[in-house]
Length: 438
Image 1 (cartoon, rainbow, N blue to C red):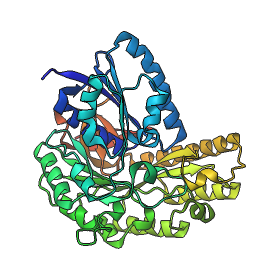
Image 2: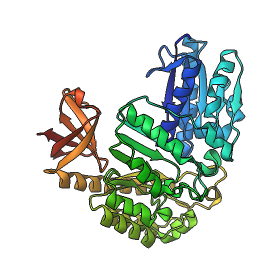
Image 3: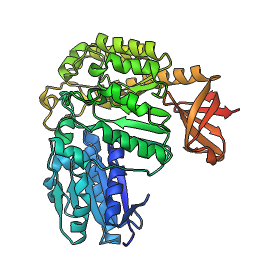
Image 4: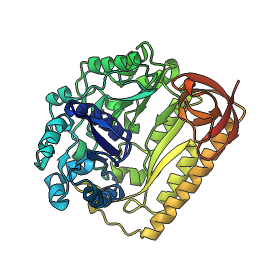
């Protein structure tokens, strides 16, 4: 089979990163292997995100620039997948005449036949939802492809319908993979040398609850922890309302579960949380943070925060800032609210000016910079275990990640990649730390 090259650009969350890995695996069936650059590629695929309006706008900008690539290579195939593809469907083919094919979030298994059709000059869009158990049989299994860490999808879709969120409309309703298939994928990863797995889902805490006769998420974590060769386990994303005592207990007695949890709060005001349909109050959230910290004292919290939600007052915003300080997040991913199609929040009256929203975003970013700096300074002088992931930016350096999801750069041989190292933190920096072995 002729070796053709595909360049995949991934946008958005870890779920899309995992999907891109599955796309690569599917394309090998029709003779494509990945390349890091567009130059020399026979096909370009954009795996998209539409959670924010800016992310969607960026996709259209990139597709416009693809006209230049087509002048250099008229036979170049261009595909769009992910959330923008699911949202727009065949409309994308009409909006972008040079686009070859479009595939939605439930259609990764159709990519090989779509590509073959595109090679024959056919333009096609596949965006049907499969919201029943047959969808479970369509999850591509990556197998033993090696690497230090691996994403493993355990569920897909979401049933929460937060008022601002497009995910249920572009990812579908929640469905959990069979535990035996998840564990087999983890075993295959471990056999190929993977030492860390990250379990992925829109709301991993509700894993298995619809089925009712299998393991819940906490039980699944314990089963994954028992797989030989897996030394670290991460997961995301956790909806705060579904954090359970059995899950908190896992942090207390399962050492392989990393000392980090991504726990999106979105806002610190009860009034805004209610309009967002988040299903918890500020005090509910803080009680769960306290319980998690009691179970694992060194746990690091990261979060998502939306500023400028329709109707957010200055007092509401100050509640968010005070919550950030109370939790002491190690990182936050912050966004200005952008209305998304089909969501309830898209129709809410919004009187806050763009300038006010930007000022609030700037204040959140400045506060987070301070909180991250405090954490890094407090770690100077500590000896931490890191899993070495790759080559650092400076010559002779490699870098590893702590259990708490902090990056440490240090001098060492590249042969250490994939192994654990004990490093002494000697200097803090805004986004990482500097360490020394020995």
